[in-house]
Image (tube, rainbow, N blue to C red; front, top):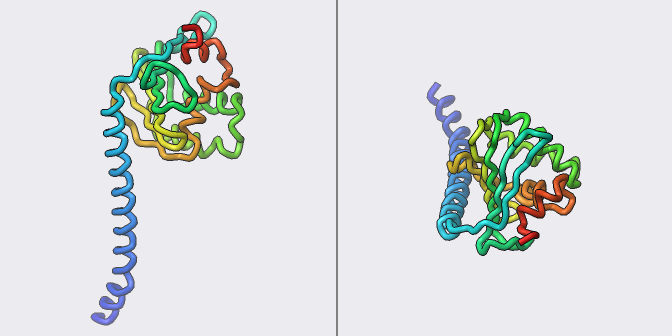
Length: 188
């Protein structure tokens, strides 16, 4: 029995150390990203509004959106960018996700990429109630973070996610070109 226990300990110890090291590396990487985003957010807390627009469907007001940048101007490559959406009605997360996927298809996101991108919002988004605010801060094409009523949600580090998400509103292929024009301040 002692030999069996000793062998079991010898075999399992490297696995637990390896697993612990992997967890430690993941936690360390996540902490570095959290620290980076907090420093970034603190440095850029004074973002200026570029433009704002309302999304209406027939006679229903769905949401109001605001786009913000460092200097109040929209330049495609200038980061960070922050999109704030204040909802004027209750919407379940499932419906928000479905609408997002529809818009990704509309702007030309590759069908094979959509499930990978969709997974990010499925893990992050809550149901929204009238008056709730869902914001997204884009730090790079691959790094961004959602905020729900100004409380941070998990950091998203997914290749192309940030660009694809903001592309719903900012892409020239958007389904709402008038809304895009207002958000990017084209009529200033």
